[in-house]
Each structure stands twice: as structure tokens, then as C-alpha cells.
Picture 1 (cartoon, rainbow, N blue to C red):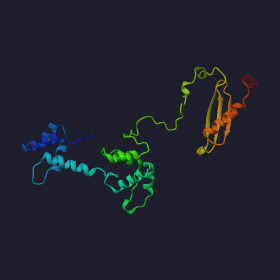
Picture 2 (cartoon, rainbow, N blue to C red):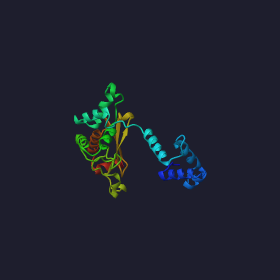
Picture 3 (cartoon, rainbow, N blue to C red):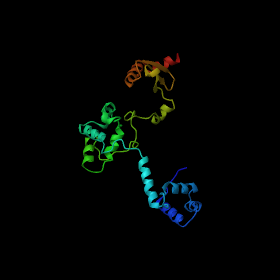
Length: 242
């Protein structure tokens, strides 16, 4: 269950109800709140020697909310922010700055490390003005706005213009036409060794290719050498029949 903070209007109703002598259970039923919520609200926010005040309760709630929020690690008025600003002007990227801060040993900047996302967020959270514009221009991209990290498509580890295996022609899928091969890798522990496999889809003929490692270059070289050693299709089918 989620808890919703009492609004100013609800606090005003509590103040009026208290002044008119209404019970806390009646106020709870009117506001559709638990009686314990009303009791806790009055107990926490009533000033000693005074009746409950909605205005005072709202102010105290805002003070408590500010105090419970964690302090920003990179506020514009901090010494750490001045150091980050200086390094940005020296044309260092936020990634490089984060690495430098991790290894810095300055007595006045203990635990000075902040990650690159904190640096980016601090820059783009600055009010519109000269400093914000200057620091954005110091970034490698220099974009006026920043895309959320979760936005877009993650293109890491993808091969450019890669053709999916699901769109291969139907004659390959039906295994009716000979001459179509399917390759794969069998990797050893910690990818220290690898063996390539080539299977002719129509006949099921299998070849194993020894490889020095599991890189794409070794796979292309090994598969190419194995296929170049293959006889012509006529000779291949004769070998299969024997």
C-alpha cells in the first residue's frame, strides 16, 4: 500500500474540526483516512501551548522533507564542483574526470569521487545561462539537451547491417537444396580455446575446425580454409554415398 501525504486542504479541515470539537475518528471518516493518521498528524505538528494549525503543519512537513533528502554530491557552490569545472575547461571528459577523482588524495576533498552520470546531471541541471552553456560546450558532444540513458536502442555488440537467421530463404529452411552450411563455435573454459563446426544442412555432413582462439577473425579464416578444401558438389555426393 502506498502512503499519500496530507494536503493543505486536508490539514485545514483538521484545524477547523479541532476548533469545533469534532472527534478524530469523525475527521478520519470525513477525509477517508485512518484514525491513526489524524492522531499522528496532530501529535507531530501541534506547537506546545497552541492549537493545531494547518499553516504550521505544512511548514514543518516541508522542513522534514528537506532534511531527509540526501545532500547533493556535486552542488554548484561546492569545492568539488569547482574542481570538476576546472577539469572540464581543460578538455577532460566526465569519464576521465571520474577516473581522476577516484585517485585524488586531497585532504579537503575526502571521498571526492563522483561518477560520470553525476557530473553530466550536475551540468545539465544548471540554470540557463553562461556557465551552463560554457560547460556543455566543453563536453565532447556539446549537445544542448541530453537524451535519457534508457532512451533509444542499445546497439552495443551488434554487427552493422547484420542479416538475421530468421529471414533466410525458404529453400534453406526446408533443407531441399544442397550446398547450404551452418556454422557455430564450441568455446572452452574462459574462451581460451574454440572449435568451429560446419554442418551441411541437407546431408548433415559435419566438419570440425580447429581454431587458435574464439575471435571473429579466427572463425572467418578457419571456416574459409575448411570450405576451400571441400570437393565439388558431384564429388561430395559420391563421397557421401560411399
